[in-house]
Image (cartoon, rainbow, N blue to C red; front, side):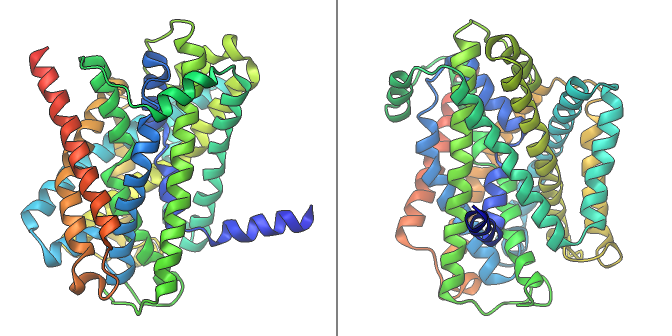
Amino acid sequence: MKKIFHKIKSTFSRLGPGFITGAADDDPSGIAAYSIAGAQFGYKLLWLTPLLLPMMIAIQDLCGRIGLCSGMGLAGAIKKYYSKKLLYFAISLLIIANVINIGADLGFIAACLEMILGLPFYYWLIFVTLGTIFLEIFISYKKYSQILKWLSITLLVYPVTALITKQNWTEVARFTFLPYLEFNLPFLLAMVGFIGTTISPYLFFWQAGEEVEEEINDGQIKDFNYRPKIYRRQISHLQKDTIVGMVFSSVIAAFIVLTTASTLHQMGITDIETPQQVALALRPLAGDFAFLLFTVGIIGIGLQAVPILAGGVAYSISETFGFKEGLSKKFSQARIFYLVIAIATVVGALLNIVGINPVRALFYTAVLNGVVSVPLIVVIIKLSGDERVVGKFKAGKKEKTLAWLTFIFILIALLLTLFSVFKH
């Protein structure tokens, strides 16, 4: 048993930015989107998880490759080799989307802590906001990346929750492998929310930046914008790490849909606005254990996702305007970078005080993610095939084909939804 535990720990320690990025994709706002999909439409949107999986892997692999091979984050590479206007447009929308997401996530964490531990909502909101800022600024990157990795494990509560609730496995198989589509506004909105929370631009920026952070931490390069010497084994490790992270993310998303489809949808509870409503609804339907598991998962992954969202804003702004950046640096070495993290987190927290509707905010965030990802994917494909950026490790035909299919799929989904909105 000791040997097995040691082997698992050793394997887990080798996982890096790809795994952390995949886990962060299932943040509380993602849990909300998947829960709404399951509660409103049962198993009908499950087919999106296997369809989006290879697309997620391809896009995140290309982003990781850009960071790994160039020694620059995504914003830095776009600024140096492509359009600055596109970069300004992309990071403007990215900042808006990320800050809204941070606000929603902090609100969800605070509400869940209030549910299980008591004390007022605003006490927990302040506590979590200040706590995440403190961790990012004052904990070393090496320790901090380990904390983020272990927080990812909290997502395993969702497969457990799904398996202790009764499932119709025939229907699960049917809707997992046979695409289902309804041309009405509620279905298309749920689909766009599902896609927008699964393939998110903040993950593009985060993974590229973290690959560079790993190189700095390992002593391969001194700082951002130093070109590292890359070997084939590093590309292979990047690909394996990304595959593990994205598979993990997709499996968790599917189990969240299963949980809410088999409980809330079956009981006709379709008007879900927040993950904590899902947890409370699960209590009478699936028992205290399922309720507690679901709630702990929201808290754990939320604590991982908020700093990643804020970090994504900081990386993009720092690279765009030439500020010193990186979680591997002390506060005194990258003041603007860390101040951006703090400001983005605080502004996100304040959104809970002004009373913004979280569901509406999350929908607009998902749409923004879709809008931003469309041009970004084109640029990512170009960057990953440019020898000036990635040297001899250019993206292969398979990765490029999948990336172009992702671009087409998201564009079609957005156009269908916009058409439905105007028609409605």
